[in-house]
Image (cartoon, rainbow, N blue to C red; front, side, top):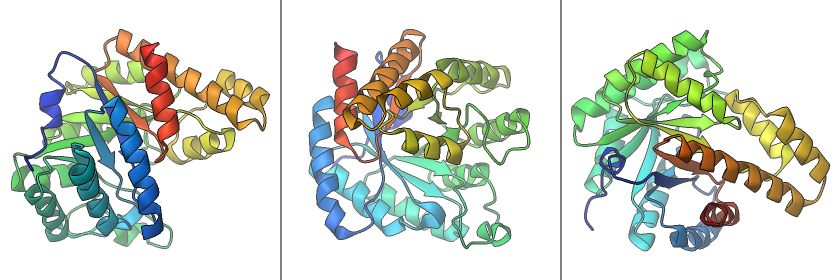
Length: 292
């Protein structure tokens, strides 16, 4: 199987990119459900898919398993996530080399979240304390990898200030990151201000907006609480009116996401990345909505 195309090369193309995020199932029984989702999503032809890593590398083996499955069985270009948490430099290079040997040419390099039960003072070791450290290491050891990094339009929850957060993001780009994918957001002005702020600080790589179609108000509140994003009052009210009707809530969430993506692309965003939570229905409906 030929190596995957580099995402930074794809981003230089004439049209905006479309990508999706999967997370590895917790058990073998869920692998078949993931296969069914992956098969259904082939119809929208994403340019690549990403595979998350789990807090503290908790899904290390399954991330590799799912990445291989998505490439071999469905022909997707795959970008596995890789984090610093609870890893040595030798370990992360070994993981990256294994991906590279398999034909993967894109990695999302992240500091990673500290899982419950792991002391933050011991979670990072061997000089891998920040995302920039991981980017620098991988860029040096495997220079033909395309490295993506995460960006927080509303500031990383642990960053002392928005300026400190942008400085950290610039260090990742200066160390070799080729593009940025944002954490989810629900107000497009937040993304546009983030892009402007980044460019003013000398960050000139593509910044891909991350979009999550809302499937429930509870889910949206949990996700925004975890990543420090804002749930707009207008969206909250519409979801509350939808009440316990799953279909009505899904309609509201998809309509909102379609409106976001249309406006983002109209104003020049390089593409969009969908956080689909391993569910095909919302991604297919959003794709249909954009085509209408």
